Length: 161
Ligand SMILES: C[S@@+](CC[C@H](N)C(=O)[O-])C[C@H]1O[C@@H](n2cnc3c(N)ncnc32)[C@H](O)[C@@H]1O
Image (cartoon, rainbow, N blue to C red; front, side):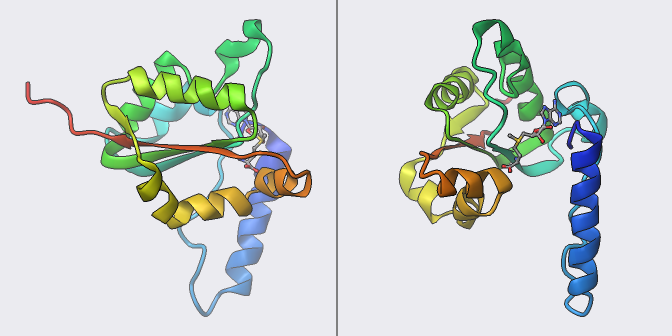
């Protein structure tokens, strides 16, 4: 889900090209990009517990306090992530902004449906390395020798009612 039309189009074109280049192997069939405001419409696209993983890669930091409400992690949105991710599923976060990293960790830490994944399990997860090195922002941060802060949160089982 991408909010900017031009970026959405770029990702859609990249996917078409990757599918064409890998036609015989049948790769890239399970990826897509849709123009949407994920902060408003996530529950309109996914049903309860549908997702196994969500990646929040280098989200906009919105440094100023009065812009913090635009951050992609908030008390309200954490509840939405808990709704769409299945128990055992994982939310992946990465940023080069330490303040934003601490903000994301503190929001997921206080939410009872999530538990932070330990460092050993985090580093053994192949998605973590891909997230560090393969996204556009990840590559830019590497070129600038910037830091990368990673945190993973596991969706816990709901308590019995
Ligand atoms: C800093 S870029 C990170 C891009 C990518 N995740 C990466 O790691 O290379 C943030 C992206 O999120 C998009 N974005 C910001 N707010 C959004 C929202 N509410 N819904 C969907 N996309 C959004 C921006 O347009 C931008 O393309």
